[in-house]
Length: 113
Image 1 (tube, rainbow, N blue to C red):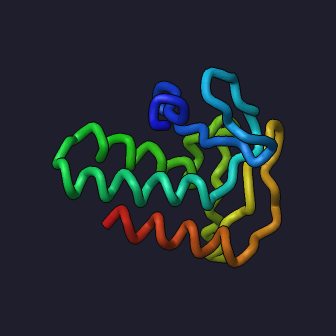
Image 2: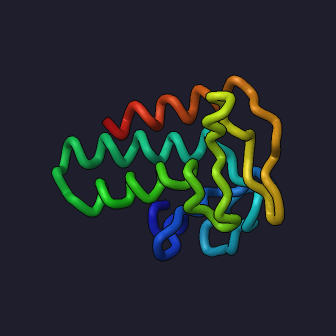
Image 3: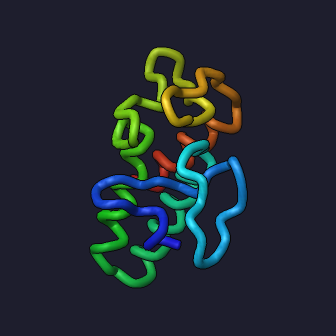
């Protein structure tokens, strides 16, 4: 899964627009904070257990999705409200700021410490 989600210096999580099937190309847009946060937490666990610096580097790359390291180069975490936008579409950010997205950002942030 890491091979499918990391493209160079960015993460591109599985889209909420459909299922990712083996041997097929998935949808490219419709990314949500919950998937990025889950990846950050998993990579934190991998690094803690295996001490492989590659996992730490990927963890930082994944977290930086919230801070603008995404295909739109837009910040997903909103420092003015403390919230987090609900998703990243092809050409825009979903400007809703639900509790789930805020919690996902905060949990991912905790995993970075």
